[in-house]
Length: 292
Ligand code: AMP
Ligand code: ZN
Ligand code: FE
Ligand code: FE
Image 1 (cartoon, protein in one colour):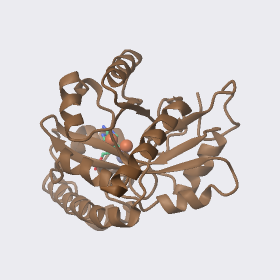
Image 2 (cartoon, rainbow, N blue to C red):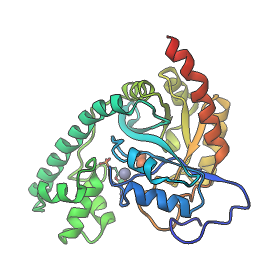
Image 3 (cartoon, protein in one colour):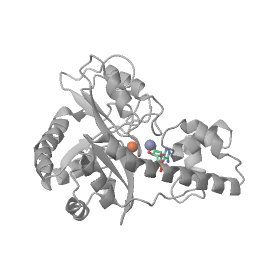
């Protein structure tokens, strides 16, 4: 298993990439610089930094690469809704970061308002956590439920993060508040306007031919095939479907700081060839868009 620490993994000459990771710019545990250091130690060819509703860590990550051959793919993970409920969309290979950030500010403001509602619900349930405590944990990053969970654990109101989600914060639990501002069509358009490709994140069983075709009509470019939430059978099924429909495969560990296991940096063993195919699609598309 490829951990984020220790010696470079013996990959038999094959290079791997990890196209889904989080930093302190959202709910990851590591700074963008520490993420890049971990990726280098894991022997990765490239990582995509895909913070929730934020590109605040991208420039730091790119600067941290220094003289090494590691590449950083500018990315983002947007939370959107469609008929299947909350759906995550990865934007990869972003180029127009400044224009994108203006749009992401609104989404981060929505996250803050939502966190206030979550805190209110927790208070009603008898858990006296405060918004200031949550903001301190988030430390300026895009606020998410993991920050609330960490505040609950720090104050002894939940034994660990898992308990915090199981008891309060998970979908259907009493302090759950949905994010419901952005449609998947708008999310795809935001990614395209920022020069990126739109990749359906960790779709699991929702990756059916009908659904993917409907999303292709909205401009979907790819599907996250390799992800820790997909078992081997699901991964094979989604890869076959993705290739059959002419969508681009992608994958990553969805790293939030885990030192080992399936969610460790690089653990998904995503072939560099998938990244090359994405880059070819981006390179082939840009000139036509510039003319249009
Ligand atoms: P949010 O964007 O605020 O809805 O939070 C979603 C994030 O919470 C995910 O990206 C995960 O990092 C984390 N998460 C979601 N469900 C769980 C869970 N059951 N246990 C621990 N972390 C979770
Ligand atoms: Zn997260
Ligand atoms: Fe996600
Ligand atoms: Fe993620």
